[in-house]
Amino acid sequence: MNKSIMVVIFSVQISLTCMSIQAKPVVDSLYKRLGRYTAISAVVDDLVERLANNKQLGRFYVHRGVDGVAREKQLTKDFITANTGGPLYYTGREMKLAHAGMRMSKSDWKIFMGLLNETLNKFNIPSQEKKEVIVLIDSQRDVIVEQ
Ligand code: HEM
Image 1 (spheres, rainbow, N blue to C red):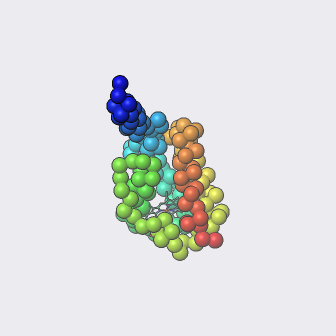
Image 2 (image 1 turned 135 degrees about the horizontal axis):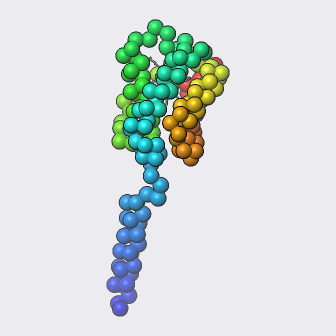
Image 3 (image 1 turned 60 degrees about the vertical axis):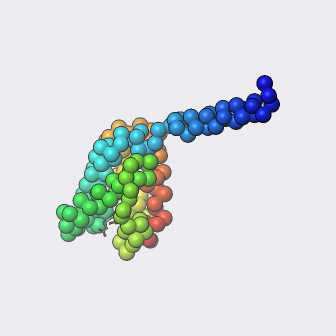
C-alpha cells in the first residue's frame, strides 16, 4: 500500500477514536447521577425548609414573603442543575451579591452544611454523589460567609 494512503487511513482512525471518546463520556454528569431535576428539586425544597425552621438560621427567613422563598428555591434548583451538567441556565444573581449584607458567619455555615448532610441522607444520595454535592456547595463558602 502506498505510504501516503496509509498515513490518511491512520489519521482517519485516530479521528474516529477521538470522536467516539467525546460522544460517550465514561461517567455520567452529576446531574444525571443525582436523579436529574426531580431529585434536585426535592432536595432543595427539603433543605430550604430545614434552614427556615432552624433555630439559628431561621433568622434569615423571618417575615420573608412566600413568593420570595419560592423564588429562592427555584433559583437554587437552577443553580445546582446548571453547575452539575444539567440542561438549565442560571439567571439569578452571583452568590456573593445574593447574600451580601446578611452577615452570614462561620457558625451559620457549619450548621448549614450539617443540614445539607441531613437532607442528602434523607434522600439516600449515594456516597460518591453526596461527596460531589458537598464539594460543590462548600466551594461557595468564601463568597457567602462574611464574618
Ligand atoms: C447558610 C447558608 C445560606 C443561607 C442562610 C441562605 C439564605 C438565602 C436567603 C435568605 C436568600 C434570599 C435573598 C434575597 O431574596 O434577597 C438567598 C438567596 C439565594 N441563595 Fe442562599 N443561602 C445560603 C447558602 C446558599 C448556597 C450554598 C447556595 C448555592 C447552592 C445558595 C443559593 C441561593 C440562590 C440561587 C439565591 C437566589 C439569588 C437571587 O435572588 O438572585 N444559597 N439565600
